[in-house]
Amino acid sequence: METFNFIISRINDLLWSYVLVGLLLGCALWFTLRTRFVQFRMLREMVRVLGESAATPAAGAKPAPKCGADVPPVRHGRHISSFQAFAVSLASRVGTGNLAGVATAIVVGGPGAVFWMWVIALIGAASAFVESTLAQLYKRPGRDSYIGGPAYYMERGLGRRWMGVVFAVLISVTFGFAFNSVQSNTICAAWEGAFGLDHRWVGVGLTLLSLGVIFGGIRRIARVSGVVVPVMALGYILLALGVVVFNFRRLPEVLELIFANAFGWEQALGGGVGAALMQGIRRGLFSNEAGMGSAPNVAATASVSHPVKQGLIQTLGVFTDTLIICSCTAFIILFGGRPDASLSGIRLTQEALVSEIGPAGGVFVAVAIFLFAFSSIIGNYYYGETNIRFITRRGWVLALYRVLVGGMVLFGSLATLDLAWSLADVTMALMTLFNLAAIVLLGRQAFLLLADYTAQKRQGIKDPVYTRDRIPSLRDKAECW
Image (tube, rainbow, N blue to C red; front, side, top):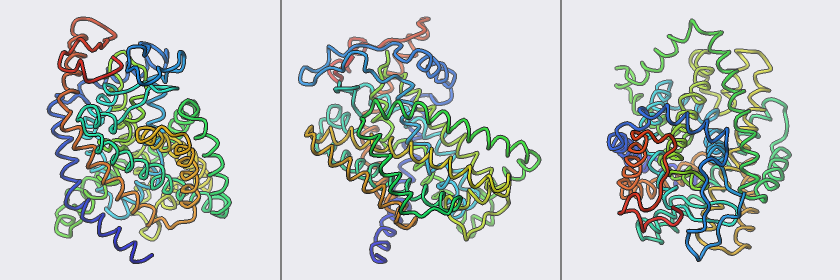
């Protein structure tokens, strides 16, 4: 096991130190410039579209009869709304990365890591917009909802099915196995710290609960996420805001600590800036998933009148995840001063909250992480399911995958935290490389769609609609428009 850990660690160092950081930042900056800062200039439109979809879930929905004849159309009344797709993707984003991941980044990379988490969210949101817009363009009709994601736009957009299959395997392993083991590991650690419960029993209960939801398919996942995500996010944000208000006078001190550790001369000479940057980007990506190729899988399921709508909504998800929820965790930890390096992951967050509001803090974090991480488990599973369906339509393969996901949830409850995080880092890096290559090659199509959307808005059209004849060069690219 020590040899295996060493090999995984070396692969991580290679990918994250020399490859991914530059590619992620470079692609994010390129998309930010080419979309003319879409994540900032269209923020108001993001909120409007999300509010519209939450109020009228099927607004703008279009039937699927014109889609490819080789695939059965989506059943009438079974569309996934734009808001439900947002909730499922946020369910996957908002998990251990927001509580345990932020704590890990601060311990390893210092408070300056928080700054780099903000940076990757602010510019990486443009990557999230591009990949989710492409997923909408190339979506296909499934039995219970639309389906799509990077594997689909790699096959149809790039004409490289082999690339889509490799990506499908990577994301199925990354989210269904590696990430879900991290989620269950963190739940068990939190519940042991708060209630003294044995990892094994918590793991068994969590596994059975997860299987009960994921065997219900995307519509059950969407219903559960649509309830759990708003409740858990709002509750955690309100508690964190209460802590911030209570420590309002210390907020400037905490912000100064974050910026000083991100750019200070002392940190630069000691290599601290590099550590902060690496941890911030790594944990930031794990948390908000911008450019990774995960959120597009659920973005494609939404029934909307224009692909750009879901691209905007998924961009808002990045901001919600990192700028709000991750920042809440960082402030809670840093209000207590320099974190205790002897603690790791969720235990550090628990101890920080206990110091702020008393013993109830540890219990609150245990309950919060259960909701956060459980919703991530079912959201992560769906990413795997849609890609298993891309590889094969055999029902027994999907059933086997569901059972194996349950097994990895149980495995994660018993594994060491370091091993779980290391495995997640490697598989996340590999799938991100494939997705970045695809969205760079296909990015121009997302830019054309954005130009069409903004042109309709300038014409006074409140609710832009896309049809395949609006952009001649994309007419033969998509099935469902």
